[in-house]
Length: 231
Ligand code: GLN
Image (cartoon, protein in one colour):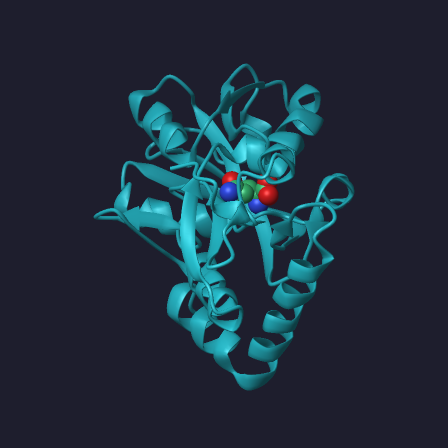
């Protein structure tokens, strides 16, 4: 799926990693979600069509994929951090996020305090991984990194790890279908998602910020938020 679309004027190539409901997921070969809708609005504004490039989250969050020209923009529930702002061009915030602790249903683990000696799954290159690493010594758990949220859910179900720390909204959505998992603690990290472009692409950065300004003002953002995230 890694085409040379980044050089093609009629195509907006979008790097993402699925599953990450409700922001991006694929169904019957089609990509959908809050981020995907926002990218469709950006493409409309630029008179382009969206081409999704599925790639590891790690290569997105490090800036590697964008700066290698793999895609024009990353839409991946990507939290804005100083490190990422230095590696890429990051848009204004469009979603406020937190982390959550998830365990197999019926587990004795209720909070971070119960993780001593256990293995905690995180997504490679994520802010959840950074949080888990920063607090591993205090709580006495071991951090195990996985490529995708799907792999984490499978590992929890199989019992090869006993807990996971990852983004709250995505876990909330995933546990609706993965009923063998339970969300036991919200961890307030006050993150904000942004879209990322290649480091020097101020033109596209201006466009994505202008698109966000427009949809914040005209009610489109609120409508999409309600549709995908609710409340
Ligand atoms: N918001 C988190 C981050 O930016 C996780 C995003 C993801 O896993 N897609 O690291």
